[in-house]
Image (tube, rainbow, N blue to C red; front, side, top):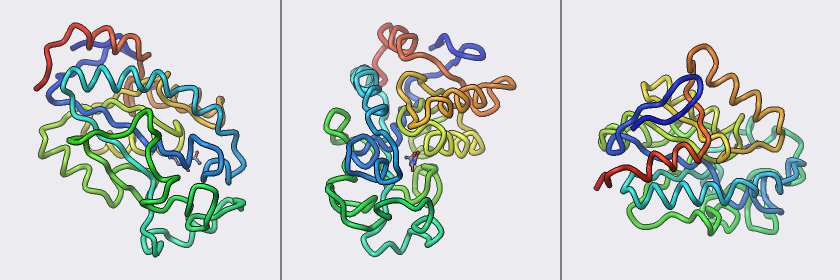
Length: 225
Ligand code: TIU
């Protein structure tokens, strides 16, 4: 398949490609979570949910592999370095109890993926202690076992967990596409810069495309399985 992308078309085989949805969890999208505790306006992020739902629905229909990630720490915070917990002067730190339970702790209400994009059986869910999806997770092995060579990214936030994950994936040899209208930042200027810098220099980190281009091509595909 060939997607109209920047800086040039992105080619992939459905059976060798995974859709990776980064951290679409209540902690970042809904009020009362980690995103708001850092002083951010979380309403900006909710705007991408309908586009993410369209892509996820079409990808499932096509039989593509789906990976969801969550930024999540163990309840005892053994996987949260003090340097991360102490950063940023938030109103609530990682592990503190907020309106949606303990901030960024696995299993808490705030750590759940939003209902509109909730994983279904057979989809991979990765809990990651870092910003990148590969650091201290089994993601690379799982992708190799599944024969995956290409990754399509959506999720939040563009310049933090999405960009870090794409850079990690790029260094591990995956070809990466970011769906521009399916990712968002608390800072619109940072999103714009992150998108530009990833596709610059001949796709130095990866490609970018709008979800409509992706959906059009997907609609013409044969199911992967
Ligand atoms: N603060 C911010 O923009 N992002 C994060 O802390 N984590 C993710 O991007 N998921």
